[in-house]
Image 1 (cartoon, helix red, strand yellow):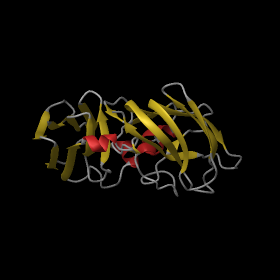
Image 2: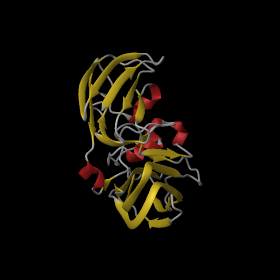
Image 3: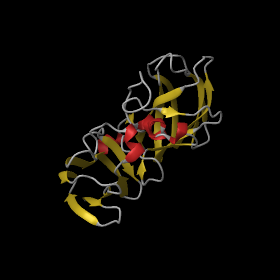
Image 4: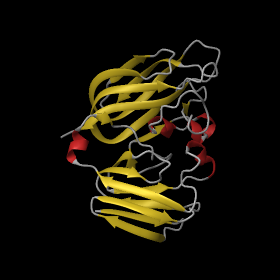
Length: 258
């Protein structure tokens, strides 16, 4: 059973909808700051909480998920039409067994948000340039490959603010079988520099090294692992005058365990 509640900043339920394995509904409200969706459903869920966001696979570790509507400075990382206006469409669907078992980009989640969350995948880092939403960790799993610019949507990325010990972790919420990890650099050259190397640390303690080149294309590492999270660290800036290397997307290819 799927349950969708629209709640205000005080937690009062403004509207509620239910569906057996799929739920699609229109929401008639001009969202106010503090509004949120409270979702209850199966662990493996396909979700689109606004048509300005990509349909995403979301893993609910505890069967519940609270999604806060973005306001203020957070909106820099969202499409201008997302969550705007007085009428919206929400789509939720339970994933089937075949979908769960197949290999896919298991790290993609356009609905990830900064801070504590009860939905995965979730990206978090020890630094985000100036604390701005357009340089937040969540941007590397939003599914967009738009890397020929920098700053606000659709050119968001993860910026490290020149911090030498910068690290970012993608938490998948459960242990999965990983077969490949892909990295897409931001490529707004010559404004941008780039990372010439980085390390990938997995939850089981394994470490993989990736050498990278200056390109606007995806670079990949094939490696078989079982892990619940992957951390990017030991980032090496290329010898380039620009002080701005950045990562646009990280994609973990994998499948759920039987």
